[in-house]
Length: 405
Length: 232
Image: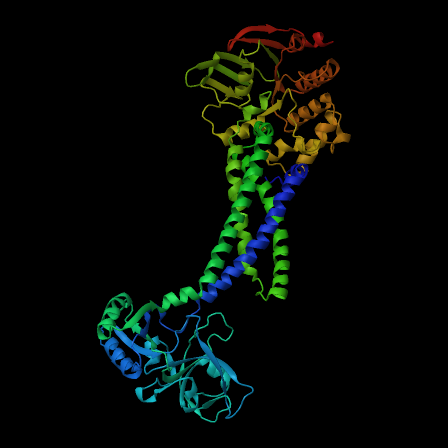
């Protein structure tokens, strides 16, 4: 039989300790649930698809040591060499590396010679076969061919005539119409740039910006005066990246030894971009673990204290007919009442704290299932912490009732 | 009511084995009032613990109400204690956090009675011990004698057939001791079997029968033909 009223009476006699634990639980739930929300959002952000097969893509950078380096010829020769490696699916050149945190953006307009009301997007100057080289899903139109690609620099925008855009960006440009075949313009320019393809997704270079996913690709080999650097994006067959990595560096060095070559996977760039998020997750997870440990130790300590303080009383209860199970149940219910009070207060406090975070720190609202999940976990931790002392209490002999100490 | 035949109880440490009870034989009949005396360390408390199912005996046979209690598990022993045996302790052993009503309620809850039945029984025993007006008091608000009367009320609430009292007047002055003793005699008159452990020879003489335990065995049985006359 549940002894709720007598347990409440007993708790009332030790109300300060019980209240402190309840308040500790309230604070813990407030912090843990909001920290868990923070972690959840960061994890969702990290887990969102990039639109590329980054696990199978290598970014190859080189800087030529020779002066007056003949870049277009070198790129053609390098790409031919790279494509000859059996496990390579496709390769292209690019003036920036996706997911790297380093990139450029521009405003595009629906009308010529406009300078207001543009649409912002990150852009890449790339070569033929970019959708295949990045493993992007082409959902409309076509990929760039070699004949689309012009050689130029930043001043060559007024000669661009083709672009591939992401679906996200296309929907912003033309919410109600099919974008392929439509034209865009760079600012203060009347050179029409035809949308020839739409890819499902590409997060671009900047993963943390609100415009991530507004990405466009122009067909141009970027050749900057005074610079002899280039980047290739090379996609291998799934699981063959290491093999391609091993072959590529050596082959490129043999083809032209007068270059500094570095290779890194796109996955590594992604990891670097999310490093701060991952660190935040680790710190918050540590805080949550510490808080859960502290609350567990607090409950363990308090319940152990109550058990040791009431040894005689437990013996008397046993003598009066309490079974071991009844004694264990008594302490678990007592703990449940304290933990339940703290968690009930915590549910309200967590939502209040979240409202402040939403209002002043632009954080998302705390979903009820997440809050209830945290509450349930804390309740289980509380009961788990009380279990050992409760079982110890259950093993107290009823003969203790007749002892004088 | 209670029959012990060659009951043994020994405690063992790494190096020493102590025999608290050795071939202990005793029979207590229904409705008897027995006083158990003996020097310290003679085995009185061990006898009380075994008789009250607070401890298991090491050997021999113990029949309570005709049933052999050897081999009962914790749950069965707890239920038997709760239903058949009432305890009165020297230090009263009331639960300090609970008021008098709730203290008396403790064994009744373990018995599984409904709230209305528990209340009826508690009201009745509080009347019997003359403390009905103080049901909401905490034990610390009562005198020693009053606390022991509540302890007796707690023992009686379950209407046990067998009452075990461990030095029930040991912590009381003579006036209060006499009141408690009179209450126990009244309870015995209602038909409850009482076994009382005491150091006090005057109290022991008021029982029907006096058993002296020495070195874990019954050393002497003394019968009082008319215990009521002694208490007069």
